[in-house]
Length: 68
Image (cartoon, rainbow, N blue to C red):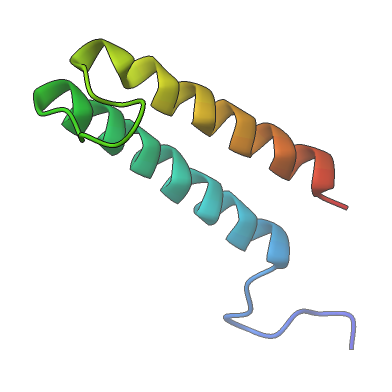
């Protein structure tokens, strides 16, 4: 009863994977934007890639604040 099931993944482990996935996604978006600007409002120039990084920091901060 006290042992976890074999192959079971704890919710904390899934959170770590999801955080790594979002980190990788933001890094890929920044790299893609440096190569070819995305053309979205506010992201028209290559030098606007910092806005993607700022959005990532805000998202991770909100997740940390809302995590139980």
